[in-house]
View: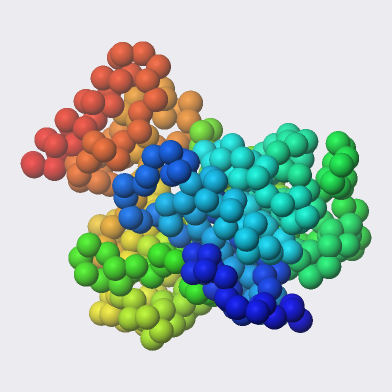
Amino acid sequence: MPAALSAPVPDRTLVAGADPHQALDCLFVNAPLRDYDQRPRVNDYTLPVLGMGYIAGVAHLAGLNVGVLDAEAHGLGIGRTAKVVNRLRPRWVAFNLLAPTYDLTARIAAALDPSILVMVGGHHAKATPTTVLRDTRFHNIAAMIVGEGETRATQVLRDVHRRQDLPQVMWRDAGHKHPKYSIAHGETRSWLAPDINTLPFVDRRFLPQDPYRAEDGRLEANLVCSRGCPYECTFCGAAASMNPDVTIRTRDPRNIIDEMDQLHDQYGVTAFRAVDDLFLGARRVIHPALKAFADARVGERYVWDATGRINVLDREDDGVLAALRANGLREVALGIESGAPRILTAMDKRITPQMTLSVTGGDLPADRVFHPVVDLREDEETVALLLAGETHGSA
């Protein structure tokens, strides 16, 4: 049991989920997108760190006192974030390493008390583990968790020596240059790909801005309905060939509905956004979900948004799309990327401009289309697709 502190530390008001009267076992830190000490943040909302919420929730259920410091959500700069961590004195600090914020995270880590153990994970850690482990701005990387971290992170937070026998864990001892690697024995799947239907729902106490009040007045929450992606978009870090260790899984739709109902009962949430890639990205997911949502009368109670695939929805008839809307679908996000066939082929998008027009009915807002420009003609093909969308939609 952590030793009790004499009084709550004021900086703890920035920490979501932790018991303010007990010492912190781990502080999960989401770095800001830029240094807000230099230029204040002007927007007031960012997507929640659902991955940290999952890991923190599992650790909390294991009896650890953990919290999330979302520096982006609070608009904290690098210096302020490091000062908050040092004043709170957690045993561990855990960072999610992502390419846009890696340097900012490393600068925060460099300013921390060297006695604080550092845990890292995330896409950047997975893509370049040796580079991260040799980055001397991280004084003491006691554990790098590669891949999904709920079960392994909790074990290491409880006992640092577990890093030696858990799969895909690396570290660099303080004062040493060379990384060290775990040697796992026996079955590893339960550590690397936990059953997402038995994981606890995201504990929203660890998310300072979720649920949130949307512009339409509804309380809205974000959900993760699947893990992994079977597609091979060449620009995407989630491509299947980039993640051979990831077992693609989808949640049972009844499990998703249970989380919706829990969020409605606890907070009054009536709008949801599925932030993963597959909820409307595979027919084997769409049809069971549609039946379960209809049986539970989801469309009479909630609205929801999801990410979809042009090529998948193009194969569905209008009846399926109408049924999705009747069962609560409010918005679908589609990766159109380009109007140039050559670019789409190079990206391995498996779509054509004609598919895009068919699925969207011509509703193509220009601010949602990303088109890498190889030459002017291909840029013009994307513009032509947008103009064709206007014509198609008004026909």
